[in-house]
Image 1 (cartoon, rainbow, N blue to C red):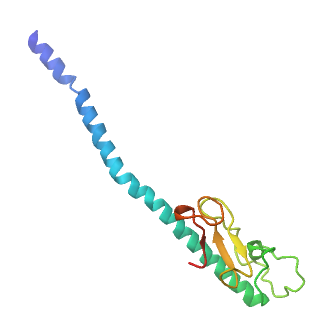
Image 2 (tube, rainbow, N blue to C red):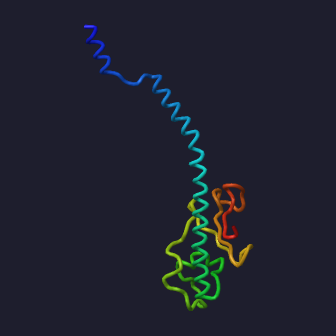
Length: 146
């Protein structure tokens, strides 16, 4: 009878509470060590995307200028790269547009376009994570002046 209990207990072997706690603690330590590195890279990826988007917008602006001899006005904005503005002076506008769609920054907001710019012929920028002018660190504006 006693040997039957031993074989039954051996067949029901599993993890003890102590073993489960040790595994959970190890997973927690790993998450604490690796987590900040992964989340720190998210912001870097967002900045890289903004810079790429701005480069695409600048290329489209330059094509627009080659065709029309001027950049779009601030009022026409980036939308002028997608659909033709109501301006009779634009006789060489590319009817296919210069961009496929209105680009949005990683935070879901449209890019800001100003001409004349404060730092050049035009400024194209994202307001950053906070969506406000200026800011520091991850809330700073990211623009074509960088």
